[in-house]
Image (cartoon, rainbow, N blue to C red; front, top):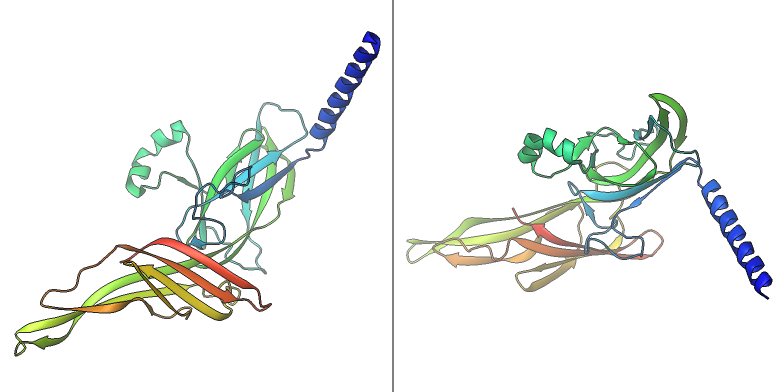
Length: 288
């Protein structure tokens, strides 16, 4: 009986060892990029932000996992390099459509302390991603323009500065919209024999999903814009690219009416060309 148990235990160890070996062999030279809003357990890491409600100038987190079945060695470097598909478009020009960022290490923070102090976002703008070993890393993409982004990258492996492998990676896809909200006042009349002005405050918003023919993220039918501001809810037809009110105007005699709040929340609802309903929520939009 004891010998049988030992034999079974040995068999389990052999199978486990084989499984581990097969698992290691099943990790070829590759990289997988996924959005950084969702953790490994499927939990949202930065609610209410997610990959469906990205705004221009927002730091969009991504996670890349680099695998390589080759044994680790000295002088290895892995690079993930942006690639521009000329015939495809889709906002692929770094520096014009988007920028690429990483979180700097301690040495980089010290070296670029003036830069970070000047621009204040605490991230390092880079032309490509570089790592000295396989593993999982975080980086950021900041869209500069609104639109539909279809970004391509290549994964390059170098040993002592010489390329030994190069592959194309699946595209990174997301949409970014531009939301601009503002408020202003003007004199609309007067009272008391025109000795006191009547001033009105307006509340405006404009939403753009891009300027190119491929930028059709919010273009659909039956669009509705729901604004939440100052404890009030205003629902109206959504008019993309046009000025709309996110709150009805208010008037006051004498001094200009004040700003009730400095931020608002909106929800955009519409149906796409296939009749599928979509709802996107954007919170804490600053009012200028």
